[in-house]
Amino acid sequence: MPKKSYGRNERVGAEIARELADILQHELKDPRVKRATITEVNVSPDLKNARVYISFLTDSEEEIKQSMQGLKSAQGFLRSQLASRMKLRYTPALDLRYDALQTEAMKLDALIKKGLRTDD
Image 1 (cartoon, rainbow, N blue to C red):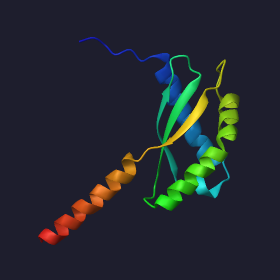
Image 2: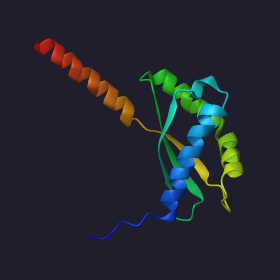
Image 3: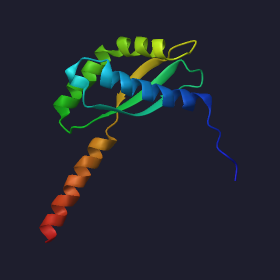
């Protein structure tokens, strides 16, 4: 069975995810983004663009919308912090996207629990 190569863009993506999580937790002062979690980072092959997927520990659409606005306004700060922490020729442009998977999982979990209660 051939081994899957772990390319440079995957390694850089993993490092960006770790650094962004640390920046969100310790450096960013905006209270709107305190519930943000980096779920995945996909880096382009040329390492100039990074698509960052973010989820939140809430299912309130209004809180999610405000949190995404806070992250979008802090995008330049996040990129500059990444530049100072990582040793790359080019700091990737960040494309911040909401990852609805966790929110959908919480909704499904609530529906399952509700269904189990009604079966009793």
